[in-house]
Image (cartoon, rainbow, N blue to C red):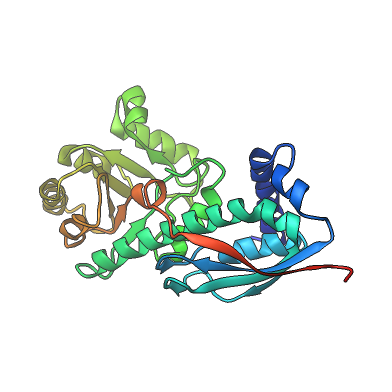
Length: 292
C-alpha cells in the first residue's frame, strides 16, 4: 500500500484520538507553556519487549511538524532504558500528543511481544506452524494491531470481513448445512479466495473437508480432539492439501501441546485483546524559546 496514504490515514486517526483526549485543548499547557517554547525529548522503554508501531508513529510525528531521530525500528528487542526515538518541536503540541503516542507504542509493542512469545514457544515443537491473529482488535486499531502481530513474527490472518470467507458457527446455525454453505460461499466468491470453515467436532471437520473446504478451523478442541480429527481425516484420505487451523483458549502454557500435532496454524485472540503493554515514557531533556 502507498506509504503516503497510510500516513494520511494514521494522522487522521491520531487527530480523532486527540479530539477525544483534549476536546477543548490542553488546559494545563495552555496556562503554563508559551507558544514559542520548543523542546527536545526522548521516548524511553521502561520494560523489555519487542518494539512495534514506532515506524508508524514517527511518520505521524514528522507529518505533524516534529523533527524525529529514530533509534529503534519495528521488531527491535528492547531492554529497560533503551531510547526508542528523540524528537524536537513545539512544546505545547508535544505535550498534547504525549499520552496518545505512548499509549499506541506501549499497546502495539505489547501485541508484538505477546506474539513473539507464542511464536518462540510453538516453534520449539513445530518449526512450520504459523501463529495467527484474529479480528479481536480494538475498533480503530486494526491496522496497527495486525502490523504489530506481523512484527512479532505472527500471521495477520484475514484483515477484515471483506477478505477470505470464513464460515463460522452462527453462519451454520442459520444456513443449517455445512455442505450447502460451502457450495454457496464458493459460488459467490472470487476464484482466488480460499474457503475456511469453523467446526466444533471431528465429524464436522470431516464433512467440511469432504465438501471442499480449503481450511478447517478446529475451534475450542482439546489436543486429544485435534488428534482424533486429524486421524479421521487421514483415514479418509483428506488430510493432504487441507490446511488445519486450531483456535480457542490458546496460551503460552498449552500451545506446545497443540504445536506438536500435524497442524498448520494456531490462531489466538489473546495476542491482540489481552497482550498487556510494554511501558514507555516521554522525557523532556531540553527546552528553549524559539526566537531566543
